[in-house]
Length: 304
Ligand code: GLN
Image 1: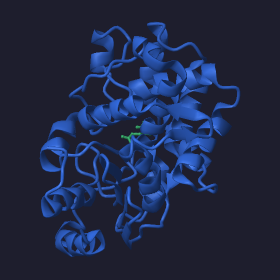
Image 2: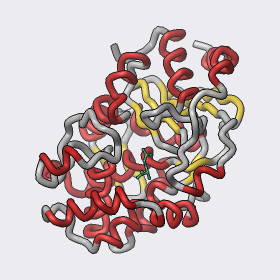
Image 3: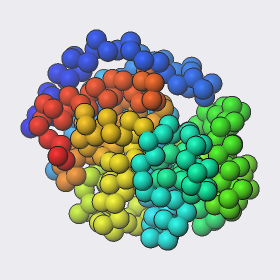
């Protein structure tokens, strides 16, 4: 399969969608990003790489960070993790409060904001140096020691983060989180602010695509079964209230973020990352969704 040629062709084909959608502006710093950017990168488990356009430009990974925080929590807590968070798709927006009240403070899954705020709380409890340890893990799994937080983006999100603060308060009221609300929110926003390129994300997610390879990065170890289960949650919950649509159009486990990034994996074959800041109304990258839909259609490869 000539993935390089395939993604070059796909890029030409999705250009008519280049002006569709709008970048996230509820985080003031993200509103400053040039929306007319696009990058894509793939890695196969056999060592092939394909990359186009701005595959090496770093961007705000936002909710893609939730896969990394889940991986750390699952490694540390094992099955006990599921006492504090579910594994069911929510069918609601990523920042919705509705289900959290109905479910008495136990978030539906670790990929909606409430679930990821619980992951942030667990890491604060379990780790001596949560900020350093999270970054060390991400750097190790991506094989890139210069990956970093963007503290300006994190502070900008905190300043306007009324909804996430409401979620954290509800979680605290129900006793789901143990640490101080401000500390939990600070760490949650910081994890969202990590900046990575498509190439770095694609390398990082190859570790999830290839569950037969030992998963052991900066002391975070997962069994093959745990990796497969994280992939299962990406499949069912990775795109919030568009998880069904992504599954229908693309047919791969994946995760999106409001920075415009999307990662997806084809287990035991490849990982792919795509980025373009213009989002659809549900917070997923317009060109990113299109590119991945065409990728699995062209290659006739999906998990289905
Ligand atoms: N930091 C963002 C938020 O909490 C992440 C949302 C996302 O990428 N879907 O709103």
